[in-house]
Amino acid sequence: KNEVEQSPQNLTAQEGEFITINCSYSVGISALHWLQQHPGGGIVSLFMLSSGKKKHGRLIATINIQEKHSSLHITASHPRDSAVYICAVRRETSGSRLTFGEGTQLTVNP
Amino acid sequence: DGGITQSPKYLFRKEGQNVTLSCEQNLNHDAMYWYRQDPGQGLRLIYYSQIVNDFQKGDIAEGYSVSREKKESFPLTVTSAQKNPTAFYLCASSPRGDSFYGYTFGSGTRLTVV
Image 1 (cartoon, rainbow over the protein chains, first blue to last red):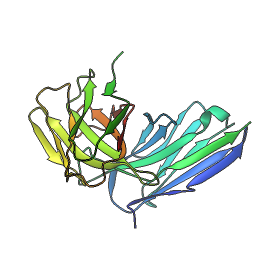
Image 2 (tube, one colour; image 1 turned 120 degrees about the vertical axis):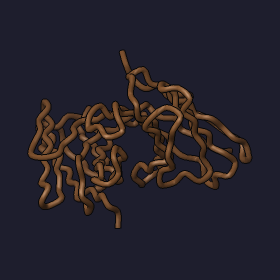
Image 3 (cartoon, one colour; image 1 turned 90 degrees about the vertical axis):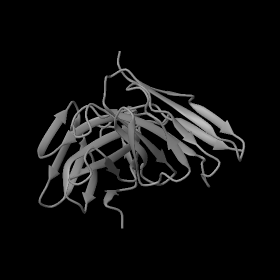
Image 4 (spheres, rainbow over the protein chains, first blue to last red; image 1 turned 180 degrees about the vertical axis):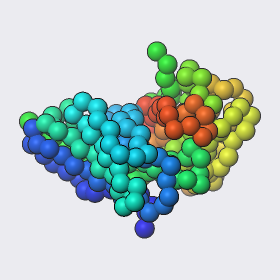
């Protein structure tokens, strides 16, 4: 079993829909990252969380440390949001190294 | 603007040949990392370096080698010993080995063995 599990693996939505991507992890962590990977392959860091909730534009990320769970929400989704969204954790025992989930492929149709 | 530059974007290699992937950063970051991505799998750590002239093996280091002679540069060599080298390779950096912040990724190199 992977230490970081994401769901769903694939998600198709219509423009304007509210989207939620989930991430569960089974290890103690010092931080959790949400990343966005576009078709060309480059990765952009969206959020780094150690507790609570963060918001940036239409993106909201939450984390529940006790339940070992995080969610990424996209409000008013748009076709340009289509990408792979990756959850990654920094384990308490591994310094700055990240352990990655397999990613969620999001497609937003116009 | 500061960032990470990986080159080339696409690379083709004949079986049995070594090949070196370049990663350069001008962010003044201490730590640098190499990850490998295969279809349907999460990124996996190959090697990382927290300081110049020092580096550690990650989870899948076999068949790879690195050097860290300069703070800005962390080249990855894929040797002929790597059994399945065709993959997407990502370089990343962060300000300090134990820092939360400023994790930055390059745009990747797609290596194909022919």
